[in-house]
View 1 (cartoon, rainbow, N blue to C red):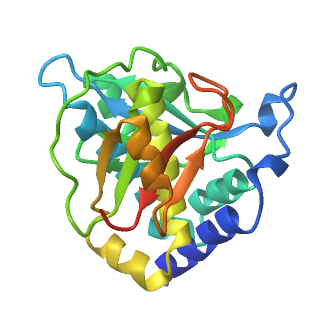
View 2: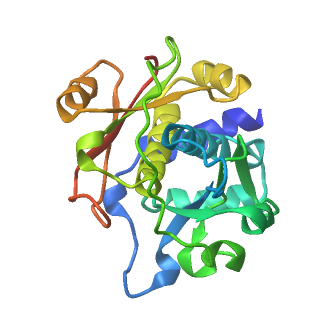
Length: 240
């Protein structure tokens, strides 16, 4: 039942309150909560932008619905604190030893490409993570082909020209909000299969059309970095 509890907590956090009611105080960093995402970007055999973004999206939803999030654990307490705030995420890059070192911190890794961590106040981020760079996450756009039919898909507005790091945070928002919007039976099946999904980038007009589709979960950004406030950055759909 841990997954059911984790899903109920996620759904309540995403559906029963407005993120605009966030109690953050910019003058008190201890009130600002965020989930850290670390992307494994080695110099040799660097994964494609799409591979990294799909791994990040899966890592975030897997972290939110990890059995630990449905039990009485410190991991669950970390998510409970974060759920009372904006769903901030910070993406960083790592490689080699730095990537291996962060695997020991509470979180979930997907495909050895992305790890999403239990959230915390930004002043309490473990030094193994905080020392990693936030910038320099640019990856060339690739052409992955059509999204997998019948599986969830997250579309990105390519007109916003987001870096891979910014896009990783946005698709992470998309995957967790999509799970929160679905019934438990749907989520349980998705979780059983390892949260398969596709991430694809679309021209703005096509992206806007996707936002209007039934069941679309649209993510609007607060506008702290890279994009204007209230920009629709990604849209998640339960099936491509």
